[in-house]
Amino acid sequence: MVSGQRVVGNVRLWCWGVILLFSFTACVDTSDSSPNVLFRDEFVAGQTGAWVLEGDAVGRTSILNEQLLIEIGEPNTLQFATLEDPIFTDFDLSVEARLLEGDRRSSYGLLFRMQDTEQFYRFEITADGLFIVERRNADGSWTRLVDDWTPSAAINQGLAVTNQLRVITVGPTFSFYVNGNLLHTVQDNQYRSGAIGLDAGTFGQGGLRVAFDNVVVQRIGG
Image (cartoon, rainbow, N blue to C red; front, side, top):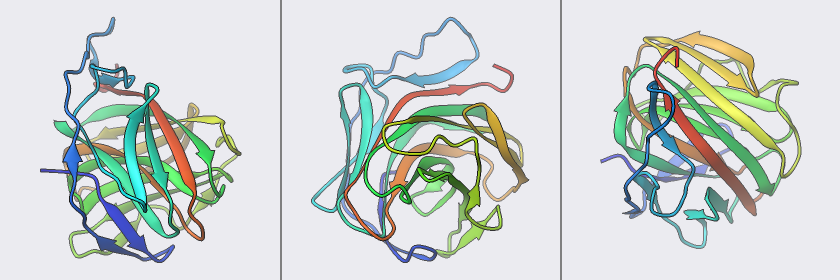
């Protein structure tokens, strides 16, 4: 079972802690005019995917007003919701996301090819215009697939502005986009398939709220 998880630790080197979770499961309407759509979620009541949601005073994930919300009350915390099913190999994944409240240096983004709660790839942006791509390893370490947090003019900065994040995976090749602009392409063959997730993280301060909408997974070329 792949699930959501809270991570507490340093801004650069995270220390992990697992908490008990519950899941929200419903029927998903994946019908679309395009036969290439593998999964779609607009977070409409009664049509939402099998996202694992959890929460307490430190942080929570929830579905409200046709959005998936991540709220974090504490600094140095990573919170995410995982789609338990289906598992994807090669795909074109996109989502719309907005930082509603919090420090613009906080991050939000996508997890993909998740093996479990501690092994996955992570594509993250901040509301002050930076991005990162990382691999979380089984031994608890992180491998950066870019040198560091990298600035990009393609990222819409500030609160309550929408950014579309997109990841295309073809075998070991991953391409990362924001708002239709290619940011980075890497190759890594550690994880060949897995679940997807939505995440947000705080650094120096809490009080973070991020909203996600319009998750779409398509076949390559869809």
